[in-house]
Length: 188
Image (cartoon, rainbow, N blue to C red; front, side, top):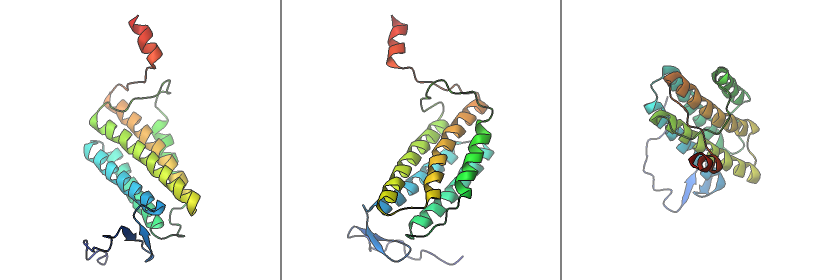
């Protein structure tokens, strides 16, 4: 691979705009740049989760997801390009279904936590939802690849399921939400 970034400090964004891969420039608060930033943050949060997870299968899955997010980012850097195929959301959904197959059904919402690794997965899930909202905003304004929208939607589900899967495999008890009504009635 040739050098892609020979200069990191360019000063070209000092005025509040940034360049896309197609050579165009956008304001740093432009909806496309915001979506790219959300994907970048999601990728960093997945890296944090990988650093805390001591499960080779989960680490491998999260690494693949990081590569997928770079593919999606490459797509967004080139308006009109469609790099994310229908195989991306299908693969995430299949992985989620496989991990979820042996998990007990949910009766209540789960509070984030249980361990540092699980809390980081919950954080990744919420950042993924924010990235999805940013992509929807971009879709409203300019249109985006529907496979990319489906991918992020499935990805947040996968991250939630992966957390439940790891909790079960580590013997961690999930903390379920208790509505205020049930908490106050228990103390009476």
